[in-house]
Length: 142
Image 1 (cartoon, rainbow, N blue to C red):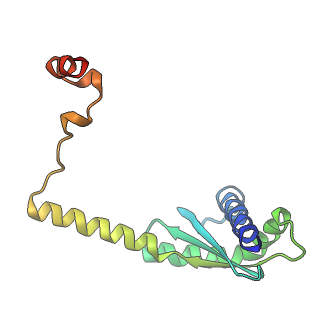
Image 2: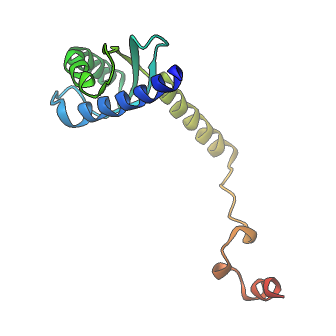
């Protein structure tokens, strides 16, 4: 039961942090930031909020500093949605998994171009009935 409560609270905190970053922080250093996940410690004393940044390494550094500067305000806003005796200590963590996924996708696209592979056309079996040729519609009805 405690685990479920921590998971629900982490999800609620993640949503609130995302709202605060998107709508309430007016720091020009914060650009395209996405809150990807939140991980609550077992004793619910700490929460790690993972984020990703669209842009260069310099953009990531600026966003990281801006989030660290705004941590107190965000922590205060989290306290408003927490229904606990104490508020978990907030830590922002850069999510490298998103960056890795983009790199992998880029590598796969480069490999497809190198091999000359084109995406396969959809098969007729997967086409809806109204897009099938007339001969197939008659066979389906029989």
